[in-house]
Image 1 (cartoon, helix red, strand yellow):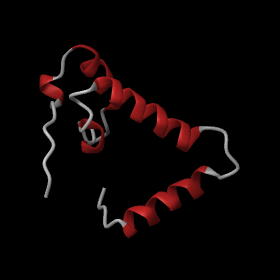
Image 2: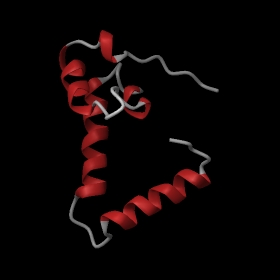
Image 3: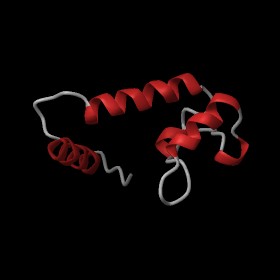
Length: 81
């Protein structure tokens, strides 16, 4: 399994720390899929903006349908996230 170096919430500074504060999940941390961008905070910002546009932006596909598509794709990819 590949390993990507990340900066954890406790060690984040500057813009990364600011972004992390907005991304804390109910379980108390930032999801790993987002932390992979920690060495490049600009890419984290782009990832979050793309996700929000895809999931919440104007579309003929309803939100619940988008979530169902995401579940199917994750299952096919054997992604337990």
